[in-house]
Length: 159
Image 1 (tube, rainbow, N blue to C red):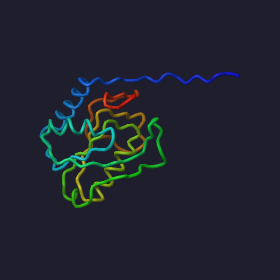
Image 2: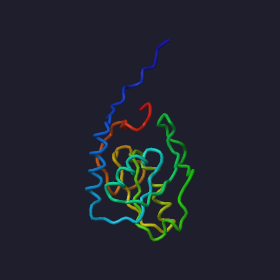
Image 3: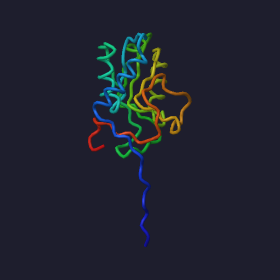
Image 4: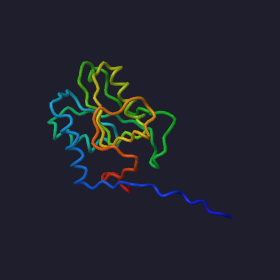
């Protein structure tokens, strides 16, 4: 009986100081743009969104609770919205959508579509963009780093 050995996954471990640098890079790339509201995608986007909100001096922060990947990083059939702001909160608003990573892009694309449907004007920002993994058209409007590696953030327990 032979044993199957999984290939090692190249990982980038992000320290808290690295995270601060990544958020600073996003803030610099967003400088000069004005946003009415920030929309943080749970769970991974919460910490970077909070840090970025301080740097951009944004206080109006909403949350989109979306489930697509399970705790093992495996995708579901499609994103499921567990919570999303009511349309009047987004209508006519310049919305900065923040997540930690654009892997397949499926989650943030679904959130962006919902913002458009609500009449908002979305801009997407992520810490890490994985173009070779993306399965949706386009790219984030702003990202700090392009990578193909598995990224382990300091705020993800057991990462």
